[in-house]
Image (cartoon, rainbow, N blue to C red):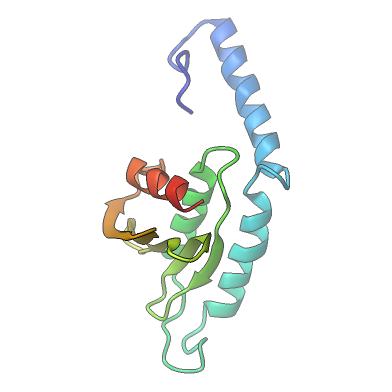
Amino acid sequence: MSLAFENGTSRAANFVRDSLARCERGLQKSAALGVEAVIRGELADVWDECSVAGWDGYNALPVTWDSLNLAEQFLRSLPLGSPLPSLGAEPDGHVTMEWGRRPRRRLSISFSPDGELHYAALTGPGRTCGSEPFLGEVPETIMRLMRQVA
């Protein structure tokens, strides 16, 4: 939460902070604005389908609990109203998320068990890729790319 009064210590500041937190939790549970349905649905499906070795019919590694947990933390840190991704898994055991429905407008993020977000994006004629640590908030680089492909 990046509110100007988050460091306040008065009873009023605490009341406002707690009220906003309750409201945000309620909005996150809504189908239109929240990520709870994605977490309970798609992310749970990825775990169910890809948590055993060879889940792809070949030699894929199982999705790791650390990668799944990082993906969940990332989803929960998205600002309200953010476009929600489609979820999947890679043969190396990483959970992946993808945004974008238009040709040449895509963002893909792979969630490494060591806390790294590896991303690749097509932004029209350009493309970019890189890695960012996940420190509890969606990195600005990734937020910018999400806006470009939405």
